[in-house]
Image (tube, rainbow, N blue to C red; front, side, top):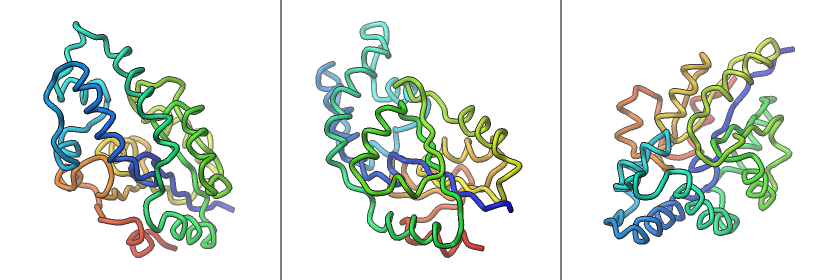
Length: 214
């Protein structure tokens, strides 16, 4: 029997790490004597995938310091501190709701998988996920291939598939995989950008069951 499936993004969607990400990029900007991002809204307007384009947008010059070195500096700042981040409010309720409704739930992240698993171990939510998918590097280029490969492998057993994320890239991933999509506007990208891409947008995760249900 086919089960409907929700594929969740992690950072910004379930994990409330936006303030930490602002601090992390500002740490790198300060080290490079570049102007800091002044607040969360400015960060949400400039954040984008692929991450190297976001780094260029905030002012980094890769001829002065290569992207791979900046990405390592970022993760050295971010990862240990991320283990103290909390989940967004009502994440547990929402995951429980969809489990009880008989959905398969999958986590798909642009994070390197070992770092993702380290974060997940801080919470009690791993049993909710049928599969946990991450990348094999720290450069967060794209999740499209990850999503397409997963659906190609599992598609015969999947009913309706929904991607739930917080970025324009999550919408692009959903479209590439012929899945439906809802974006939540309390994560890494500004609501104006999410609306502009044509996705269905909500403000908080607890609004999701009104849209995605049997």
